[in-house]
Image (cartoon, rainbow, N blue to C red; front, side, top):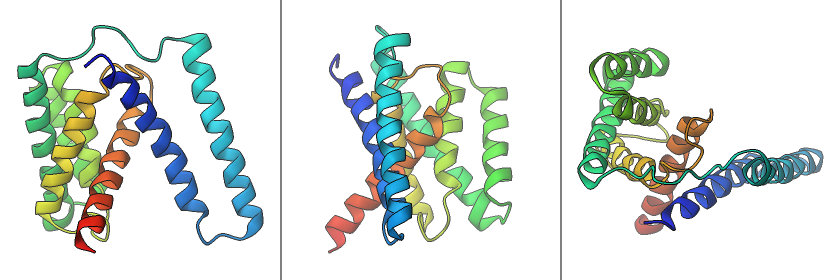
Length: 181
């Protein structure tokens, strides 16, 4: 479990670079150069920040097994509830995620409210990306596992929630595309 936090750090770095590479696909050469420079600066800044300023991987922050299972369950529920409010009820992504986030902040302990709010970002995905409630359930499960696995990485640093949700969507879509081919 101790090495899992370094896997989480590597996963965040690869997601950031992957999103930049994906954005550069099909762009003109000037945009590709700009996006490659952005990826290099992103990686350099991330590694510099981790090694020089803070310990980006905190010790002893892994949850207990019971807490981890609860987080995975709540994340699965939050992602699917947000997707349902967004797509089936027509509330839109911002209102749907906001409602789930406010409910989580009001009803849950802080250790669980943050992961629930992070998982709600999955439900904000467009229907072309997360096309069904069942896919949102699977992606919610994946985001829950990623949340638990990366808890020690960047604890308390902004941007982790969105990156975690993006990672879960990319991982789920990659597996589905691989196995459906």
